[in-house]
Length: 420
Image 1 (tube, rainbow, N blue to C red):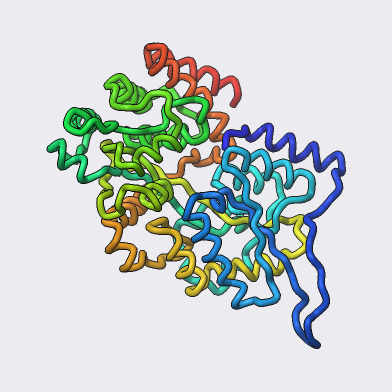
Image 2: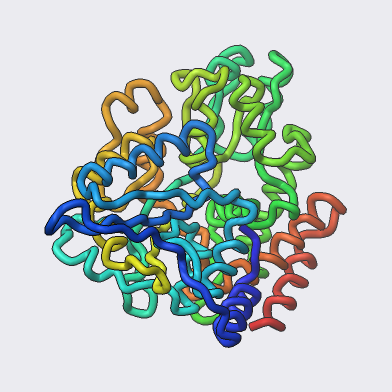
């Protein structure tokens, strides 16, 4: 999802200023009987609808709403994650788009900043148990987003492979390298997987926040953006140490790495709860053989937050709000819980006992979500991708070209200062 905010904003405002016509096509129909509500179709956009296995489960979870509101038909707008930001930005800017968009936090902030989302105060009214995952859904004093899922990161590992290599669960980067090498020597499996390429910028910068936060990085000091800090230098050096240890399949993208983990060919990875759920779904790796541990860093890591937003250009805003009211109800949250594994939801609906029993990694993710931080920079949520671009380009020079991390960070700071 790497589409810079200024480009998003300029595209949105340029399209709006040009008066690009068109609104979401809505199916109209006559009432089936006297006094019945007219049929309505609500379109829900989400890249997750395309996820193997989990996508179907998530869709079946929201389809439960049709039993509560039989006059409503839910319809998917399934968009690949690599195209999602650009597609939604274009649609919203053209006065079109889905009735409800399920968006990563960065895109949510951009769309909210452009003024295209509906105030969701009616959803929150009377709901006393919305938890902290909804916090960043309030933008400029207005409730514009409701939490869909929060996916926290952990160190996941294949326990049978660790047992075969007599490898310990690591608590430091040095120990991670040692354990990864021990597994590879004993089994031939890949020691560790992680994003490591600028071609996957949006995913890499979010994943790297775990390293940054793990070494105490804040990226901002008061009102000043602070890229060149001792904490960032420590995070750079730790990542390079891991990269240079040759425990990583250099050049493989994250889908390929997750597939190899699913095939029992990987010992360790740093991944979020959603990615982990995909790894243990429908592959050779049994869910009972995957475990999770805290990240091997001194401080807590990050989470990816996903929000639901209602399109202000939609024809069925009231019906969309009614759907969200159901989604945050006990019934809606329990339906979503069954498909969401250990992801934190809008309310504190617990992980099911059945899921916990089958997935020994679940409780660790629930625990880590209590101290994790957003991948977005506080106060600079809309600008986070712009700030992180020179940081990640500097990190790539360090790990690939052998650049000294200290001057690389100084150059990143110079570039950030020029922009802000």
